[in-house]
Structures are given as structure tokens and as C-alpha cells.
Picture 1 (cartoon, rainbow, N blue to C red):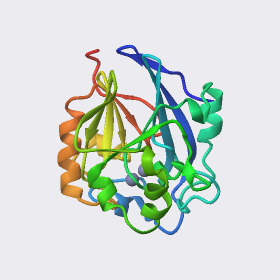
Picture 2 (cartoon, helix red, strand yellow; picture 1 turned 30 degrees about the horizontal axis):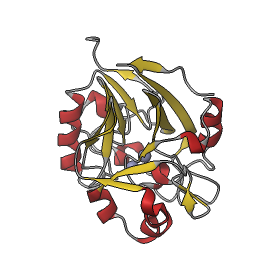
Picture 3 (tube, helix red, strand yellow; picture 1 turned 90 degrees about the vertical axis):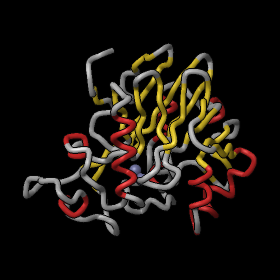
Length: 245
Ligand SMILES: [Zn+2]
Ligand SMILES: [Zn+2]
């Protein structure tokens, strides 16, 4: 079942849990190699949550990320299949109801559910992606996700308003066109950071960031402006950074 929603600046934010589980082969590594410079217990295991976020803003329905996708997803390292469809249904949303899909980036655990049977999974939605991300995409991602979106693709350059009250912020580093979503002082942060250890120390890099130094600068910049974080992979869907609300 979906988590309890939070209402911020008139926008209802409902976290949806697509999956929970450890990272599997082929990309699993010990935690100290995933997050160099951070310390972990000897038997500490990283159990990832895979969160998407449903926004209801002034009669418009926005979905942030499309999850892992079905059993045929390219995210073979993630718990398959994702259950986003059931989560959306439990929240009373059919795929055709979604007006806007914001894809934080084109990694398979965020974009794996964009396309079903070669067509956009959300048939009435425009799919908001950064130009830098679309240009960076190659191989199966381009063929299986970007190309089938066709006319549904809404390519933006930098920050933009997805719908009134919902802003998209270019947040490069993890990938060139990674983007976050800001609703008031809540930051739906995608893969801006991955593990709570990176919140304790913002300089902790993640082994799969495309540009780790840029990722650190972006992290510092965006976290300084947020009061509540809604990250994709933390155990909790919301983390309060400061109580100045
Ligand atoms: Zn990612
Ligand atoms: Zn991710």
C-alpha cells in the first residue's frame, strides 16, 4: 500500500514503493567500495528501497520516476518485477490518468517502467527529461526507452515548471541530465544521494556516479535549499532535514 501522503503548498505527495531488496549481481560491491571514505559495520547490508512519487497538484497528476518495470526490465540487478502499477492502482490512479511523468534519469531502476510493449506506459502523459540525459543515452536505453517515447518526450534544458507548484531542477553528477523535483521545500531527489551515510557526510561519493565531484557540488547546493528530502533509495520515503517549516 502507498505511504501516507504529505501535503505541501497545496500539492499532495504520495510515496509509492516499487520494490525493496539488496542490489544483486552484476553491480553489487561491499558497502565500503560503494561509498569510499564512509564506515560501515562488518556485516552491514544495503537493502535498497525503490521509491516513486505521485503528485496531485491542482487537478493535475504527476508521476516522478517509473520504477524498475516488469519481469523483462533491463534492471536485472534489482528486485523484479516492480510493483508500481499496483501501488498506483491502490492510490486510485490508472496509467491513463497521469498527465506528466518526470524521469529523474535514465538508469533502469527509474526509467524501466516508462515503456510497456514498445509504447509509452502512461499514454496521455508527457515525459519530462533533460536534454543532457537524452543526449547521453545510448544502446538499449536509447532503443528501448527513449525511442519508443517518441512524441510523448518533453525535452527540457535546465530548470522548468512541470505543472504549477512542481518544479524540475537540473541536478547533474550522478548522470549528466539527472534532475530533481521541488515542491515547496520538499526535494524529491532521485539519485542525488543513495545512502543515509551520504547525508551524514555530503562529501561521500558513490561509485556509480558518472561525475562524482560534480555530484558532491550538486548535492551540497540542492540540500542547502531543502527542508525535507524524498530520496529514491532510502528506507524512509521522507527525511526531515530541518524543522523550519
Ligand atoms: Zn541512478
Ligand atoms: Zn536509482
